[in-house]
Length: 306
Image 1 (tube, one colour):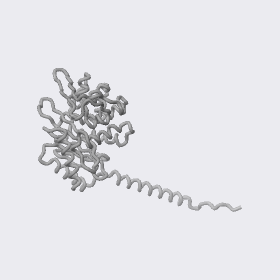
Image 2: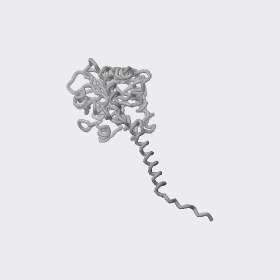
Image 3: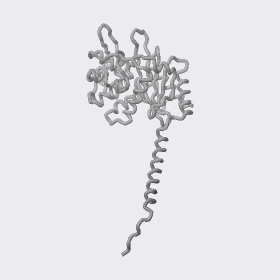
Image 4: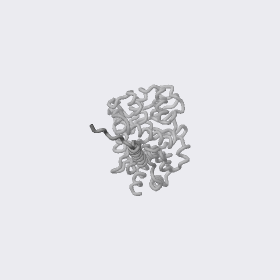
């Protein structure tokens, strides 16, 4: 009978496997660095130049953030991006819709009939919040309601959300109401972003980055938000931001701050610079959402020529 030879050097085999494991870990680590490494300084300079060019000769405040790393890529009027607080208007709608869909307080196919007129009274103040989308006397489901920013749909969505949850949704996205809503009307005004809350450009960039994470990893239940934001740019209320061949998803907002007779505009959304997904938020004093979306378009066009 042949007796198997004993391994006279057992540590050599162990050392070999140890080296292989270390090599594998090294390759995984390097791959992770390449995948998640922040944008190079040259690329950041290009993004900053594009944003500066897009907002030149305007009073707009702008910020661009890398979705994967959270790295600030560009800012125009950086101090105001943090300190200037204004009513967000309709750029809050995707946040509330995502939460309501997750909690099944509304279903993707749930429709709301819109005649475009909407008046909300809280105390002695009345808001005329008539929808500005071109269609009237139509029933909107979630995706179309977001694309066309239907105020009637989102006012009824607000009625389905308990007051404590409305506050919790904002906190989840790093935002806070000025005071908890005490009535149905206050809750509607909060969800529509016209009263009860003020935000900064940088806060909204953080909120939309978190929303982007959710949408990138979310189940099909959040498709109305994912697709509605894309549709908003393709044919909806944010169509001024569209750039042929560039995937952009976003939302506009127009609101007025308390005691001011003029409006301001917002654009908040995501797009791709090469393979990198970024969040861009633009705040335009004395303007409207359509104008802010046009500035976002100028930014994406400028990045294409850098």
